[in-house]
Amino acid sequence: MKSGKIIVGNWKMDPQSKSDAQELIATLGSKLTKSKKAQAIICPPYIHLPYAIAMKNGFDIGAQNVSVEAKGSFTGEISVGMLISYGVKYIIIGHSERRAMGESDELINKKVLLALKSGLTPIICVGEKVRDHDGSYLAQIKSQIESALKGVKKTEIQKVIIAYEPIWAIGSDSAMAPRDIHEMTIYIKKILVDLFKIKGKVSVPILYGGAVDPLNAQSILSEGEADGLLIGRASLDARNFIEIINIAQNL
Ligand code: PGA
Image (cartoon, rainbow, N blue to C red; front, side, top):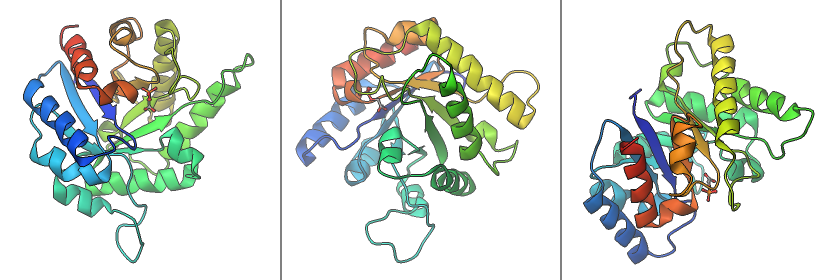
């Protein structure tokens, strides 16, 4: 995995029109440049992917979902093979909005294994609904990570990205405090060390997501020591997204 910051834009179910999507993609394509210090990955809805791939310049492409089945008769589904053949490199798996639509830990694990087997890099999302005072959210995060990575080999863990996204921060006005983010990145790395008996530095990038914007990005990346960001709303505004990439490149 590259050592620079990883900045992912999750467009969710936006932009609503072909023209708005093309305008956003074209602006990013003309303004972003590849840099070792920060890698930009945009994750548009499936329907906008071919245009994003054709225009990709200064950013990589991820998808927001994939079928758990490699092939077969599954109306409405998109397979890993299709994504790879179009040039998609990353896949968001286990986002809380998909978990809320019924995706189980077991399904998420199957998708992670399928992605790794096929050569897509999974961006696995984990996060607690609430931060209780007795700390049971910590056990929840541990169990989400352990079940998502069940059956993943030690040699494959280097190809995984984890995005810690506290659900209460997603779509809200304020991100988690940088020192709490730092605590969580340490905690998640410790889970990986124990799970895979890693000696030395953990090279799995731990991203933070939830109400990231150009005003808080710098402190999340530096004080929070996040290896990158998973950005929803601010990634739909070309100016904001580019500003965050610039912040990451200039750290
Ligand atoms: P937000 O969404 O940046 O709009 O809070 C983040 C996410 O859901 O990945």
